[in-house]
Length: 217
Image (cartoon, rainbow, N blue to C red; front, side, top):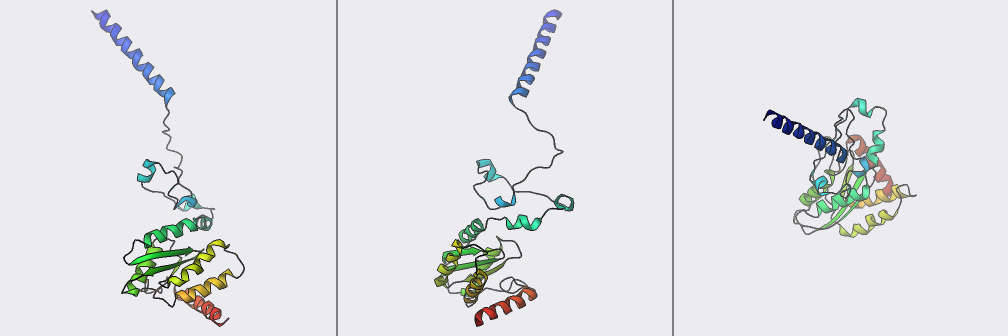
């Protein structure tokens, strides 16, 4: 009887060992946690089609950095790699969901967002504030946002989409367009230090001079 039990025990041991070996050949799980986890590159910040499996769409986004990990890296370079066209699409799609907003055109430059929208709101100031803050929620904090409910300006900012950012006369033309947009309500001040468009005192002074020079030309 003892021989039978011993025989069964040894057989079971061989079967378990065999399954374990086969499992190691079929799949391998990397349990090495010494290497940092690779996260998405800055170019994919707003790319909904990047790694668009069902699991990825349900995942949270997370990353962690410290002074050591970013030492020697050009962080400004990473920020500038954000896809501006896709960012403009995000802003337009968020803004069109606001009450009384029927049409939205958005232009994103290296430091400005221009949003022209159509509305039948009875409170233009409130709607302007909603559109502006929606745009600000989607861009880095240093951006300035200008809005206008003058839908006639939409073709103007649409024309910029076909031009390079360093196109001759681009800055002058953008300032002209911003001047026209500022004739529309811009909503409330962002804070005690920043005006309605997110400009601080220094930036407001510099931009005022630029706008005045543009107006006189």
